[in-house]
Length: 591
Image (cartoon, rainbow, N blue to C red; front, side):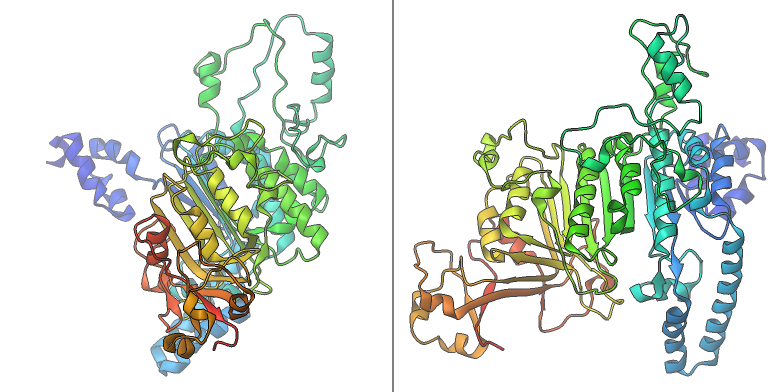
């Protein structure tokens, strides 16, 4: 009977089926089985470390009908700290004194041991051949997103899923993590460039030399495209053919290269399958989104690893969404920090077509520390971000000089876990005022589950939160939403005006709370007496939305305490919906 239904109705039935039901439904008739092909695979594919999912991806990429189903691939490289996770999972069982919970814990850790044994027997990502992985990516025409996670359990066990929400319950073998990321970006880079168009006819002498020097393999030649003048020194092509980390002997030690262009006017052989340049273009991987939720920051400090990522310009040039959460635990000394910042900034500037940029910095060794980030370095500039390019940034008169970098299509920007100067943050936001629609400052950070308040945020130096929002008010014409989460702090004795009645004794409410309200009257003079009363602004914001701007869950919000507030009032002030600044300064000696 179902065999006679229109195809549209059969697809509607499939849309309500789970994977097991889809497989059973396809066994009914050949017609239903044919329609159900597109429902066999989810559009999201998860690569787990305890099974050879790379081989599964390879098989899917060779299937004419299935390879178009995959739109995103997520690589789970999480390592679970067994001892810490055991303690976390055992506590609920002991507190409830339940024999059933104790059995659940025992069964979970028995399965965990089995998964770990399978993981040890599976070829890890850092030992894969980048050329083979690149061939897989190139054969997935709908692939647009790749995610790498180090903070989600790779095993389908409920207790572990809850346990890994505590950052201390996961660990990282940093050398292997860096090797795995190198393999991945090399493969994506090679899949992002068009296949080599083979010339025929007389070969110029220069081309003969290039062909002889590139016979060692598809990943062996150095990128021949010119290096940008703003690139770091380490980005320049090296005489050594290897661009990957010298700490590994895996196939990563070969570099991705751009194809040597054929001489002008020389005929070319058509690509297989479609002929001409259209077939070549279709065989490229056109990645739009790339995210890593725990990126070792020292990767941008080691010369060989820096060079590996610097050569992946084709990968980053096509991105519209970049989400990086950076682990700064192993980058301690100032010189190492600046070198790593320099490398990260170069990579970000290569992604010039971004519409969504999210940067977060976490220190797993000291979760409450904020990382100092010079935003002018992020844009590759040594001067102030508030110079002449920002002179006409109000309304329709906004213009940016040709020698100034900006993301021309940036609509969404998120920044978390950093210390930065007020002027640099203001300059960065104003530079992107013509396109910026949604702004997120702060985040959840390394909070230990739903019982902890948010540990992310922003610390402002050489300014105040008040002066930052006051200077941005009315100057971001496209801004629609703004969200603050976590700890916002500034310590200063300048840039704050206080009411005249604070010249003498404090009012009764101020004397009892130690809080001084801020007016919007610029004519109020600041005296030394006023300055002695003003010390700092400090806020603890509770989330109201998640990263996708949907209402936040109770777990994301965290606990509500007398100290926590929400950011709706600050959003309304920045958007010009209210005239009074909702913040306050705390007075010297206030509780």
